[in-house]
Image 1 (tube, rainbow, N blue to C red):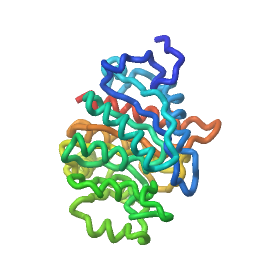
Image 2: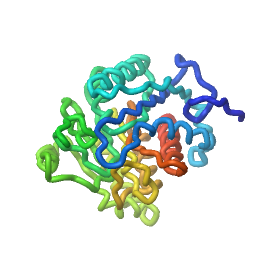
Image 3: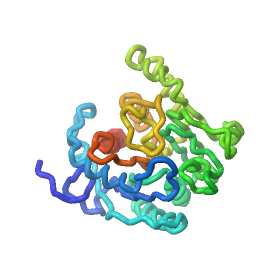
Image 4: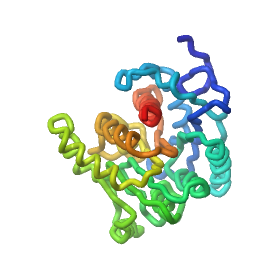
Length: 303
């Protein structure tokens, strides 16, 4: 199929927004990164790489884009000020949710997630966040900033009616009250550590055992689920293009196993994919995220 040359996810012909079921929102906000920088370039890198993703999904045996109408919003230059950026993304997300469409936000740094969740709380009383991440992101503040990327999930849990399920975590701090908060809020937080990933890897040798592990993730989630996906959840061997890489992360198939089951058993109400910091002349990680998003859309609408 001939593809139109424009900045649209998958580089497909733009669908009229009124018919869209999925709305891709590029929002490269970057203000609190403190190690590697460049997340502001993440959305464009993902969209450009997505032009090279095959339409046909050999697992689902379908061309997902033909089954699901996907549109991409015009690129918005995020404000540098946290308050102004929050208003920007809230306005965009609010319009999408009122139109009963599924928003997929491309960051940018992880600090955008609580901005998004604040808007979601106006539309959904009760839901879970499924966080894929190397870091717990539960500090109350970091480097004197309460809206740091290192505080993303802490700020999300400021809102009532939300619980958090974390997958792939392998970094949590004793400073800034992070560990204490995690210990004191076990009724709202369920963590699946990367150190236990060997349990998930048994899926190829012992499917029943591994599926029980994934079922525990699913059981911790409410019916409505928002996915917040920090790409540093992947092992740094396959995802070096991120500002705070951590060794010992998830691989592609482990991640797909979790997403496949969650999307089959729960209602996905939105997602963000954050913290990609593209490396010049090294497109593989950008392509990985683009395909990850396409796979996620396929899983959501396959059910």
